[in-house]
Length: 293
Image 1: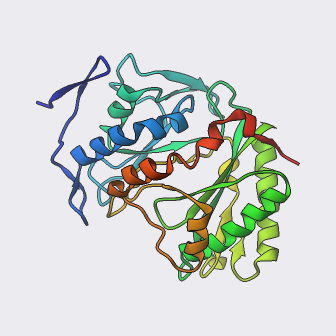
Image 2 (image 1 turned 90 degrees about the horizontal axis):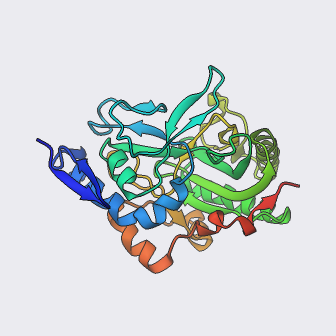
């Protein structure tokens, strides 16, 4: 029988705590749950009021990996859910609003993915994102070079960008926006991706064509579409090691462009948060949100 744990007055059955989920390091499910409890203070503000897509990997990255978008069977009645529009009709999705909900969801063994809009305003984007994906032999160092160009280009339009590792191969750039739709943010992001391809020739690429991607950094602007989601800050990823989508400073990005390692694992994050705070906290400040040009 799974042990029962009480979290802020909610009773949770946490199962298979000794199960190894990350075979390269022996990182267990119990350690996954401990990680999420430790970083909840910085993670929850980035999840709250956003309908979540779960990328589940209950048997680790070598087992079945699958998306769950609708409210899973057996979801406790105290977990908040919300109705979201879809082309096939409205659906209900989970909103992780508090620590008990976070620990319940983490017990499912999942990555957390969020859209660029809040549940209460599905037609209104409050984020813009660029997903920089390197095609081998390009690396995260090449992503950093493209990210620095995009940072400066966004700044020229009065938009402050912030960076995080994807937790996989690449880098994510995010900025807070207001008074914009997903169509508008997608169009603006695509325009900048096209500019990047021209400004950083031979490295940046705005087209999804796979045959063009080896040795290039794909500037994925399509993540801004209302139907798309992106790995949330601080989420663990379904990799061989417990890598985390980690906020980074622009100084770290600059050093990454010179080849310095830019990859973080769950055991690294507590000290980073203690020393640096939440580097993406400005995204949560509506006063810092920018209109698109």
